[in-house]
Length: 621
Image 1 (cartoon, rainbow, N blue to C red):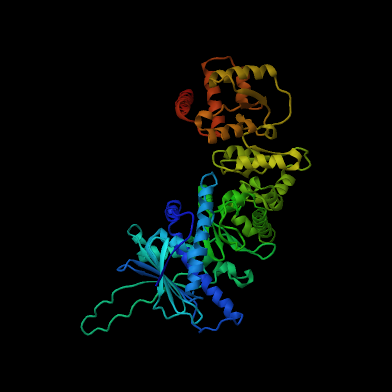
Image 2 (cartoon, one colour):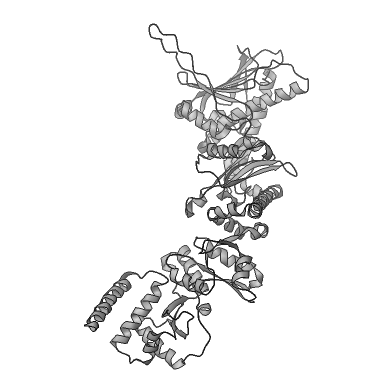
């Protein structure tokens, strides 16, 4: 037996490991299983190059829990180690690597860019985060005798002969009292599935159980077979033409526990100028707020790293679900490094381009299908356009809009049909199809289509389009924003307008409302209320992001139909209680055409309506 002490300046490295990585304790499983995979890959390489000859035993890693002994053992049948190699790779190289990792980790956590992305580099010594003692039994693929390495604190160790007879390495962790939950089979399986579900070597999980005494006349029960927890050939590692639609859907259900089928998917497979593989799914969005529930899992050589690393994946793509495997990506670096790394930026640009190209392909070749799931994907697409100009440039031909008639049109299709040769192009839209039904009908009766823009992102999106499209000659107006297209040209009496303005301002108890008098194309409409488009957008934005205290007054206009008999009567009538009642009723009806009346105003409207109906009946007697 020989003893030794790790030579290192940072003698308190083990407490530092436990302190800084406390919330990520379970990564020790990934690190130890990854080491086992490396040992098997090294042996495979030696055999393929004729430098080693071994038996044909299937490659595998076993993770075995023993609650009675309080141990968790990781066993591989890889290359194994000699005594000299254990001293070199465990006591020297591994520990110095852990030291470098901790130094970098603690430095990065002092700033705002906290955290090493993947934690790779911690390696073998992560075992001491959960262990009172760690024992390594290893037998090299050479004829060297098996060796055992034991350490209780990660600083001092003992080396002695081992009774291991099979090639490979077994690392036994004597789990400390605070972390006994890792010996629970369910916890063990779920943790391994989180980090190792797609590692390239079969991983088997089992627990040691005392055999049950058979009842009289019964045969002894056979011990349960270890269960494999990983898929060594995940779908993203295959070529797209090797995968079926059902395989894509099954992979989606398995990885994301989502039993709603994805709308469609994109299979990424790049080998130059970087190595990147993956699958991105467009999920069915159940409601507007579930659009933020996407998750993209990042892998490195089939080893799970983290979810939703926006430095690698553009932020707006995080609304999707998927997996991306980047074997060339440096993962043991800070987020600030990734933000400024040109290689990472090219990778993100590639992913964005592939998503945009797929959307355009779907639009061009499967437009009916594309229109069917547009309601699910449009918040993501619009968000991407706002966030990334290059994405917008590639995908703008595939942007479509749903009309109140149920059709889907591109912006060019809408403008060509509704605006003709007009120099200034106006797109009319509704934000609430039911509440704005009367206004929509007025536009439809004039041969104008109205599109629906009724999600949270639409205000920002149409402002973005107005800024970028057609040199500012395209504008979006809600159906209650202007009356120009619903009125005729013609002279009206300014004297009559001023009289009506006084009547309605008094009836509405509002000195700020503007009153216009115009001949309407629809003779049956008495009046409408319009709200300045830009003023309303700013008001809504202030209310949404600044709270109700920030809500600004709307710039409203009451437009009266100069051709309607009731308006003609008001122009000639004397100002009295009756005209005030009529004005109040007309104003409330116009308001109700665009939004519900609230509080006292609704009470007054109902009271006034009852009184008018009663008066109507009495006049018939």
